[in-house]
Image (cartoon, rainbow, N blue to C red):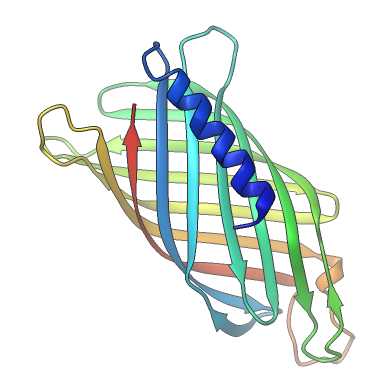
Length: 220
C-alpha cells in the first residue's frame, strides 16, 4: 500500500472511531483478491493483493454517503494503485433489497503499462471518474445476501469498468456486526496509450484484472 493510501485510510479510521457512538453507520472492510491479468488480450501474470475500505452512512438529507477504498495490482505488464472515493445515495432500501447510486473518483498512481512488442512503458497516473451502482438482495430465510457493484466511466482518455458480484454472510451470533464476503471482481481499463502498432499479434488496447476475492466487514 502506498503512503498516500495509508494516510487517507488511517484518517478515515480515526474519524469513524470518533463518530462510533453517533447515529452514523460505519463499515470497515478488508479483502484478499487474486486477480489474473490480461494485457492487449494476452494472459499475463497473476497477483495476490489486499483491498481495504471504509464507509460512512448517515441520515442527513441531501448529503451523500461516502466510501474510501484502496485496491492495487502489481504485475509485469500492468500495475496500478487505485484509491476510490465514492459518493452515493441510498435510492431504495427494503428488508429484501437495497440499491445505491452515485459516482466514484479514482486516483490512479504508481501505474504502468508495458508494450510486449517494443518493451516501451507508459504510466497513466491521474484522476478519473465513473458512475456507481450497488445492490444487495436478501435470500429469504437465510443469513445470505447476493451483492453486486458496478462502476463505469470514460474520462481523461480512459474507459474504465470496475465490477463485483458475490455473496455476503452474517454469522448467527447475537448482535453480530461481522459480515463475510466472497465473490468475483473485474477491473478493465481501455486507453489509446495501450494501443499497439498495426500488424502486431497483440490485441485491443486494454489492461484487465479479474479474479476471486474473500473478505470480512465490521459495522459500527
